[in-house]
Amino acid sequence: MARFRSLLDPWFWVWALIGAGLAFSMLSFAGFFVGIGCIVLLMLMARESRIRRSWLGLLVGAGGLCVVIAYINREGPGTSCHTFGDGGVECADGLPDPRKWLLVGVLLIGAGLLAQLRTGAAEGETS
Image (cartoon, helix red, strand yellow):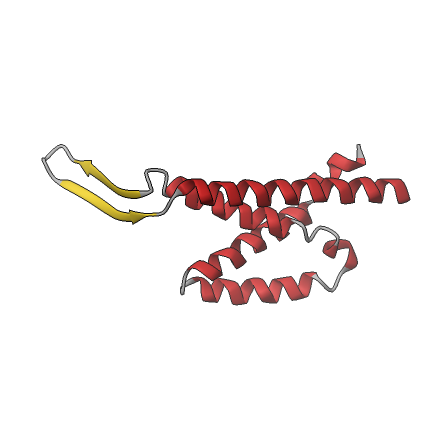
């Protein structure tokens, strides 16, 4: 039971938000400022061993952002056009392949959750 309680640890999900912020900072210039804030939070949180134990949430957060990007580009790869009721057409060129983003996202989320479960099980055995 301690194994699954590790996924309910609020610090795990705070780490996940930081992971999503750090991943976003790598994709956008505007994310630069988000990245600086995330790095400051990361350094503050890493000081406390109780909080530091849930660092695997970083993987889940980065994976979550990859899944969101896959969803945004779900009509890719290539060009996608939409026709509007007034006869207008809007096309988006160069959409990336969403399957790659989805695969990376699912792998990161799965790795983060499984590793957190293993960590929670190991902590349950020692306490």
